[in-house]
Image (tube, rainbow, N blue to C red; front, side, top):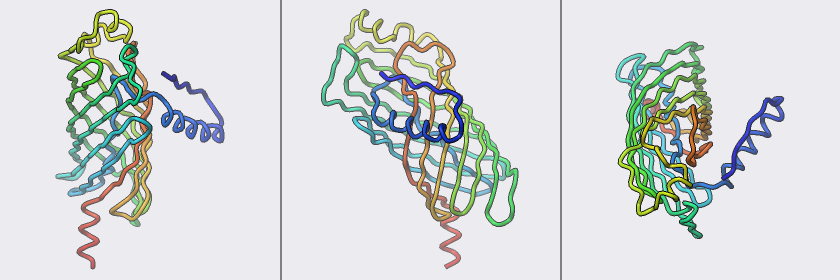
Length: 260
């Protein structure tokens, strides 16, 4: 399992570092006991804003599909929700090392607030937002577990009719339960670092960069999520997640249709 390291770099070296990180993500081992799903970055700015994002992670033997939605029922208040489905299929399974097929799923919902910090009246907006949420799911692999996750994600978003950029800092707390060794003996559980995995909640810091480009109501989205444990974690987790998807602004689409 590859370990990613970071250091302080000049801007030019930092750009190359980000590209290198993406290449590492594409070529690294992909079967984990925790893999972050995309951060729901709705970039809501007014009442009745609504959007849907569908994204995929389809690198090497790992495949994930994510569907996320957001809606603002009143000004400054947002509701978010999402579904993620992850699959890992290996052509050369090594059960003694834990490298076997895996399937995980997560359903979550959240709520929060947003505030337009700046609006130039011509479509350029700077928006601050914070969302909190809760979700649950299950992992079926060399061992089976259910899990729940709580999160809080403050962020800033720059939005235009043709390009959006968002920076978020998600803090996630993962609690595993109903641990099933799936026939693995105690020595195997120890080697995988899974002893006591259900005893406590595990916290992660997940800095996120979201970029979108296209026409105002449909945009291509690219998102990179980093995963940094806030405490000791002895079992395998994915240190980053890169997804590509499509973002649909439902309210902008309706405005476009009405203007025709």
